[in-house]
Length: 225
Image 1 (cartoon, rainbow, N blue to C red):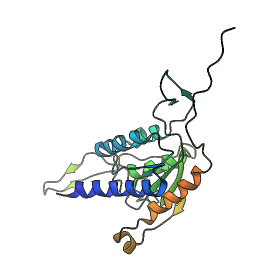
Image 2 (spheres, one colour):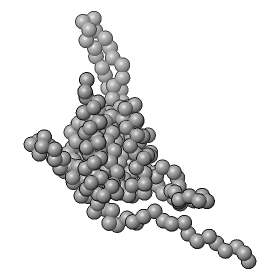
Image 3 (cartoon, one colour):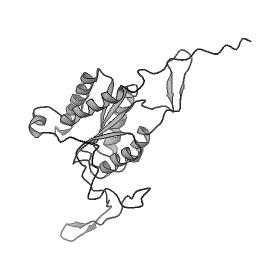
């Protein structure tokens, strides 16, 4: 099965496109699902890119799971101060904060917890969402009732509702992006990812209003008197 190799090459190709288009200023992370593999991919690519000036989070094709709150918590960390140690560069506090704009890519295969992920991203004002409307299936199931003919029956067990409006959300409607871009199949087959290109365009524009660099350590106070 060469699926993992195809996936790896696709991710690396996207990273190369983003690096080339942004002079390596912008990071890129694809999260394939919200289970162990998705967490592994997030950890593998997100933390090494924390010193990038911005990041593109790709939720396209995310098959769901249950770990989106863990990833959102990392993305939602807010800079409260800078810290320094002798003979070292300054760093953000809390640690593991990406100080810069974020955008998210979604498509019609962003499903289940892959639907809930962009909902939380928008709710917390983490950045713009780009692509096409997500799948719209967030009523969860667990276990199954077996039949003697080998079939099974599942029933709805979980569903999210809005923290403010107290109504059920997403099911049957999905998440509509802030910027709708539908990849042309012919162009995509030829290697052109219009959604990714739009994400690069948007985030580079947003970078213009962010500080250019991490700050230098300020002058030490004179306490000789």
